[in-house]
Length: 191
Image (cartoon, rainbow, N blue to C red; front, side):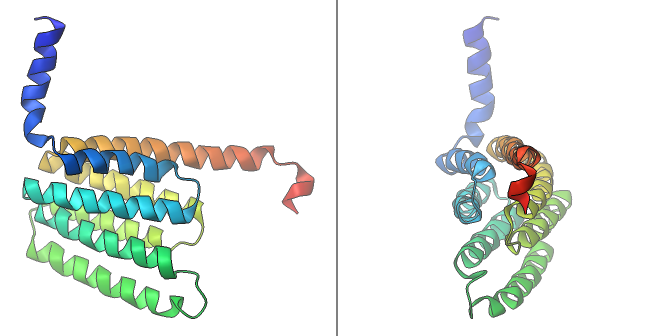
């Protein structure tokens, strides 16, 4: 078996999972992980979740699709309203309500372990979006990505699993970059 045969064999097995939304979600997931600012993280996350919602719909993973819809809404609300004077008071109740909706949707679309992984991943991502600081947000997104990795492995989403690995990689890079930046700051600049 030569390299062309191996490549053709890989393509034949992956072709059913290759779609535009999965490709875009894959790219946006990594980009969200390495973004330097909170607003850009949230914007890229919303776009990524929208793409993966469409991708999961084509796979028949309804819990994943529902969780992605909630993720888009939460990311955009958090981007626009969290930290704004006079407008952030209603954000926590909205997030609590959307978490309740996520729980109901999980029960309604229950498919065993994939649904459990999607639900826990959504819960961790919800907590991440409520953080005003990028580092705690990244740590919670890291946990969410690990859960979504379990979901994607179980539902057979090649793009989703690849995106989770790249997102985890990007988040670890960003987390380490922030730790290294703090470590090399002169003592006088910290005060």
